[in-house]
Length: 187
Image (tube, rainbow, N blue to C red; front, side):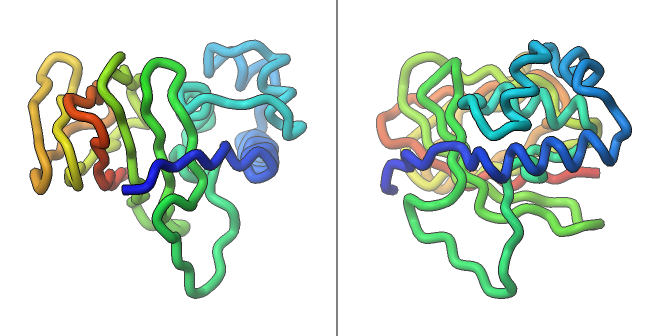
């Protein structure tokens, strides 16, 4: 699996944050407070500057009550191909972990699809996503520990696991070059 070094899609994120904050009828201060980030950070992100981590974007999605994908997915054409190593990849502050959105759910649908790549080292500790979220993971290569923080399992190439995404959960690579397909289900 090629290493995805694509940076966060800043223009899309800026437009999406403004759109979703306006839709929710919330001020910059209120969204920043709910997400646990500085108002200045949110202002920078809405202006298209800064380099948001996956943790910051997940926190903003929870604060705005929208799936993560709604913040990073640009408008899509009728037929769409995402080549290996392409797509909006967002890195973690905690671990060598990159989440690359492959497909988001259209309005009234309930799933987003990602490729995630990880390397051994620090685990990625994920905060709960929006209520009712469920994660489905199929490992493409390597091995990892994943699942709710209090019920972690080890999975390897070809294995499938599912667990609640609306509780604290963990991703920890056990082998170099670990990657998986992640399907996020939203209620």
